[in-house]
Image 1 (cartoon, protein in one colour):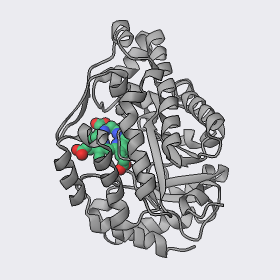
Image 2: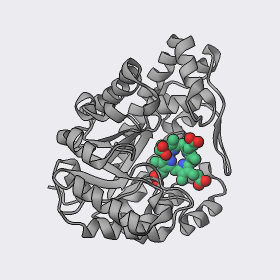
Image 3: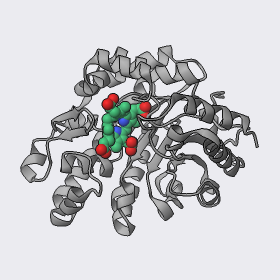
Image 4: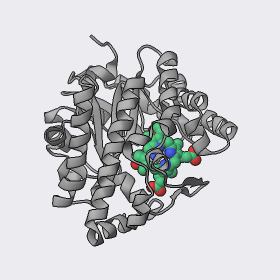
Length: 345
Ligand code: 1CP
């Protein structure tokens, strides 16, 4: 029997206070992160240098004692491993070679050929399992195929995922081939993360909200279900958290349809609604707006208490609704943690 708080919530237990971690908990709002990042030189070198990646993963655990650590890496390492050029422009974000033709697709590596490229990530996980406190759960992750495809097709982050929607409409066979390649690569990658020591894995579908109805079923639900089914066949005991960000009404029934052990909620849904419509099926994670980490004060306290209270009758992992931003005040993170841990039902 595990005593780790996060694992107990994922197994369906309603705890007196929720386990807590935070999306992007290792990041630029922390001075110690900025120092290690400067040492690494650039963001990708930080991801691919196991000692430094493990160090930045542990920094927020040291500072705050979160119940979980999330592997320091990025969802765009899969395109990088598939052979798409990837670089980061400081202050702007990721850039990749675009993927818009059959010739571009034909240059990608097969999904079962990524192990050597991604080996440093598995090494980071091994270091973390040795160095993390016994009560801290280690979460591995990958981007979901649709979200990763939006970056590969456009060659960058886009406000409306326009280029991916266009390719899906204009060349569905090519789009589907890319989705299949990404699904297979994600299964292999997450499986290796679990074998290296990840205790939970999370699928980030950050742009799920731009798909609806049949497209949502085909490109969010179905690949998520396929990835989870394959992982469960190989690693039956490892829980999976799914994050179909801004899915709205499509959060309802998502866990049942995909086999996810936990559904992560963004802050566009109210915790009271989500308790009634999503948490009835099992564990949920979320969903404080990350702006409170910038603004703090009475509003942060009130919203944190409201979320803890709304989800108190079922399994819940406290988190933000999206990643913490670089302008956040580290003191507000402590205030959130103290408030959530005091707000026993
Ligand atoms: O300058 C820096 O130091 C880089 C900023 C940064 C960081 C800290 C990037 C670039 N990635 C990361 C780490 C990261 N990315 C983690 C590590 C663990 C943690 O949470 O602490 C994780 C889980 C991610 C996942 C990720 N990367 C997502 C999914 C979650 C989300 O935020 O929606 C996405 C969409 C990315 C792509 C990406 N990588 C980096 C940026 C700035 C972006 C977003 C780009 C965009 O859409 O414009």
